[in-house]
Image 1 (cartoon, one colour):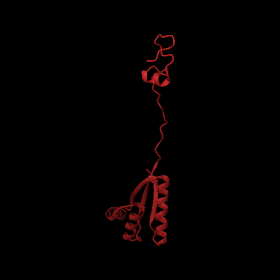
Image 2 (spheres, rainbow, N blue to C red):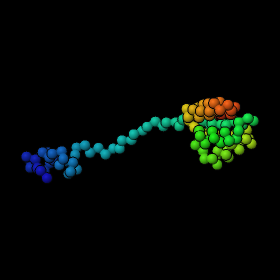
Image 3 (cartoon, rainbow, N blue to C red):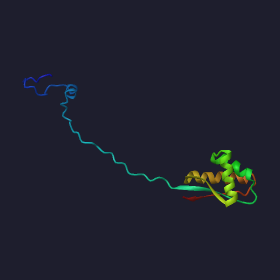
Image 4 (tube, one colour):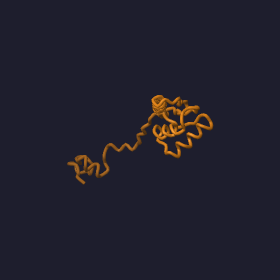
Amino acid sequence: MTKTPSGDGTDMGLTPLQMMANGTDDDSDTSVVVDTRPKTKRPPLYKVLLLNDDYTPMEFVVAVLERFFGMSHAQAFEIMLTVHKKGVAVVGVFSHEIAETKVAQVMDFARRHQHPLQCTMEKE
């Protein structure tokens, strides 16, 4: 330890690096700073629904489910049967913007292929 010119053993005259190594740094505040962030709410989710009609072929509905909702053929077939039997089925749950886009894509695709398939969304 480097002594002060007075020779009394105090930390006067030590370099900051030496003070830190000796644990004699003047900034010995040991309080913990807690960073509080405001709780952010999760965005509301929307169900995308596919509605049954008497004109759209089942194969077309399966193709829509595979293409726009990333379902396997087996999953798409099951959902298509649910739509056919119950008249409506939830095909996915998304944030508002994504649900809106999916509905628009499905409706546009159905119109371009001259099918009356209906797709809607509702808040979960």
